[in-house]
Image (cartoon, rainbow, N blue to C red):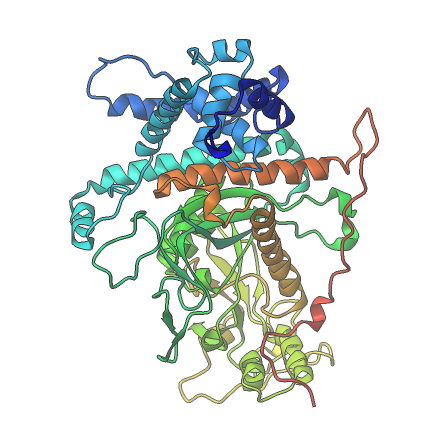
Length: 581
């Protein structure tokens, strides 16, 4: 008697089971296939990829591809729509081989594959070959995607043509962000109307489908492009320990092996009272790059912002955490100004207080002040964090700073230089100073300034009515808003909350951080797969938002999301501040 485990299932029972479980193998409708093809057309990614593939070929000999680039991207689009952004090449092969309508298969020039094990494997191999050809021409890494000796990996990187790798990276950033842009294209007119150009930049870790090796190991991981991410330090220390600024070694709070995705997320800086909640643009991913954790965060952010500029988005305020404000000015801050962004920075504890000087003026917490500003106002935030003053005293001191602030006399010139007025100069002074006699006796409410005696004479900023500040003067820490004041608090934390919200939103729904959603090794493959996940998150965000808007033919189909009442910016204090008695 044959054991039940060794019996071959009857075909009738197999067909019955397949019909009862149709979710995975549902046929693609004509409308769905058309929308997927239109999405790929909106990306405009087929042309640059095809040019790169053609340039890579040594000769025109050989048969044409079984699965074209257009067909591959169409299949990946359909797979991402059916799997919450996740793209698996086996699903792509199944869709292209058996689920598309006849008309769509003809348009994509797909051959017929028999619906059998051999037919599926042939379709899968054709899809896989095209995918790896596509990611190879965009791969900015010279390393093969398997385990290597670290010495061999270093030799390959040293011998690689850096110009070719840079060209591949440029193509990778362009193609992946074209996919993200295609998800925004249907609502681009609304985005241009309701969005003020403000963005937030942040990097979020994403795992790779590879087990990490210890940095002291003689071999790399099977994904040699990835690296360890740790929650502490600069995000690229050893996975078991991390070293802080004190020099002490401690166990890392969190470690994972993979990449970081630097996201540029749109913000909305309009005051709550000025715009109804349903007219506020949702948090959307506008651009991104993928890179090793902790490696050149400012450079990668600038790469994403430049691609955003290439696509015609207007610049506005930009909020980023302390990893970006500490970058080198020549490689981040100045190019950021060239793009038109106005940064909003926060500072580390050791960066608070006097950050620079120019002609006697003092740069304190990102703002230029009179050289005679009282010392307690200079160290207000540092004193709060060091528990020397309480919250109420800190707030009074921060609120007293604007009277000593240098005021702009006019808009910056074409070179970015601007002229600033002494607080006691001009027709509307904010302080009374004996060096500027016109400011005396005008208004008893003006703050009196007591200049410090100086045998060498008063600083230039005190002697002159106004002074020129060039675009690179104090550029590393300078910002247009007064740090810790209500306007700064409102903009900075509103933008930062938007990017943190989108990170968590995509991790919850598209499983952005989980490695099972991107099982192909290499930075190029991970970037391409991640682009479809971000596009899917944007699709869902926009669809939910558009349902709250009234159109010309029908009313809104759902109510806006209930939004919490924002906190009063005037009540904010830095973290770890001293408690009031």
